[in-house]
Image (cartoon, rainbow, N blue to C red; front, side):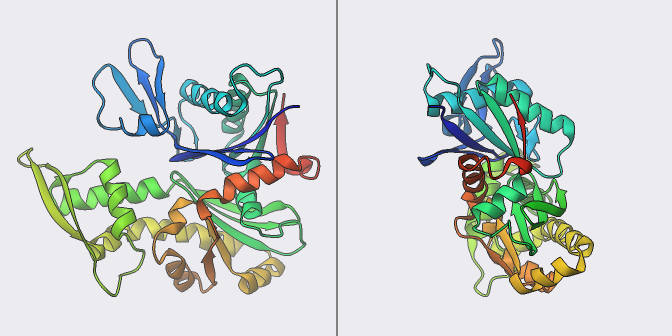
Amino acid sequence: MRKRIAIDLGTANTLVWVAGEGLVSNEPTVVAIASESGKVVAIGEEAKKMLGRTPESLIASRPMRDGVIADYQVTEAMLRYFINKVAGRFQLFKPDVMICVPAGCTQVERRAALDATLAAGAAHAYLIDEPLAAAIGAGIPVSAPSGHMILDIGGGAAEAAVISLGGVVVHKSVRVAGNKIDEAIQEYLKKKYNLIVGDQTAEEIKIKIGSAMPLKKVETLELSGRDQVFGLPRTVAVTSTEVTEAIHPVLMQIIGTVKGVLEDTPPELAADIIDKGIVMSGGTSLLRNFDRLITEETGVPCHVADDAIFCVVRGTGVVMENIELWKRSVITKR
């Protein structure tokens, strides 16, 4: 009777999965609010178009920062919107909702996620660690007594974890991911060309010509922004080599996290990881040649999971559908 919903509350995108139906919603984690009344005006795709373009009467913001809740009220309103969208506004039975959180987040951040979910209209709220959900979604046999390593890189945080026997053995997270890569591109353009560009332009550069390693054939992209010196609009051409140079320090921070986990891994599990390699999931893992750079830096084979963006939400959905089997891996509150 009750609907069972799994939500991947990401810094950049929120994905919603319904048991028995699959993925039903994939929208940006952006909310637009009327600045005087505090009323929610738009959520998701509609609100993302407003980012950096709003008048004084509207505020478009991202309520999630670094993978955790930064603005409680706005997150609650957003969760209510997604739950109502899926379950209908007038439901007889409130749905059960499972949210995934970074393995490295604090007890306070976990409680905030549970409370926001219950306040948004859930009967029971469940929490699952993101690396575990990503591993299940990537099709890794996590219940087996052997070590598997997952690297989940989203918009706000990157997490590396070793999973064995249905639980996280070693994990490290760094609040550096897709958004920090965008910021690095913005900083580089500011220093080299005195050009100020917005978040969305920086993201476009990353997707179109970004690469973790220099490309054999250099690609170029023309982009427009505001001149820092004269304050006038200006267009410059940026090459893929420049983007690779700009984002290298950020990528090395993420690789540092991977190395940290490999150092702390028990020897038995380390042997398994050398055999099976590292599996990458999350939107930022789709950055060109990132898997090659990690293989080069760590000496461990690395590959990107199929449908990397949907691994976490798919894994959360699988756990939600078989909640009895995964009782000890989730935190619950009603």
